[in-house]
Image (cartoon, rainbow, N blue to C red; front, top):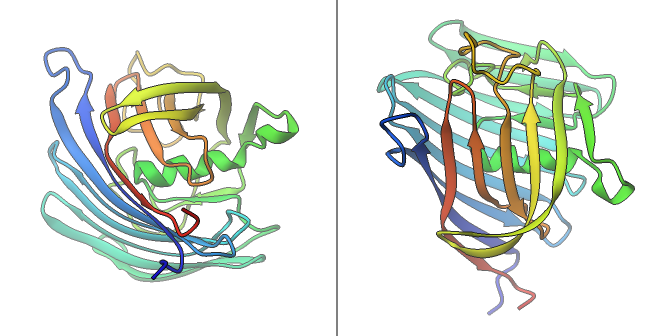
Length: 253
């Protein structure tokens, strides 16, 4: 019996590029993507960062057929301690959050929107891959600055909140080009993008500061799923992410 929608399952391995730790595993991300016949999609991701203080994050993020966020749930633990959990909902005119965090206590946020959000950042690498849809490469746009998005945390590891937060400055996102790349999970036609919050390359004193994230290159599949294949961050972070497992159930096959 055919499955009612397309399902993708994958795993990303997090490794270090820091001197003396090259290739050392520092975390992992397991995810599933389900895509309905009308184009609505949901990502379910569990991420683990082993570096102290360790981070565990559960995210369920849903987008409409237009790739704009509709609702989300995030639960966060840091250093093996619960930090918070929140539910988010997005309409054309408002973003809302109902949650509890150890730092803020019970919270209820309402954030007016001038127009529907382009994206909601939740920190799984696969969720970052979905944000690349903001660049309309079909119209010839290859580089832009984007400020119509919100985050659940401005910490570079996503280790705060979760609650509605705004970037202090627009996110720079560029389409670099089409490539064919090989990762542990296989060989794929890919789209190459580069994120940067500032022009700082992160080589100086920049650390975990909102609005000063080092440049971040990401390759995703060139099909409609935009599965992350490979990514790396330079500067002080010096970390890499690679797709090591991939499986797709597609009712069209």
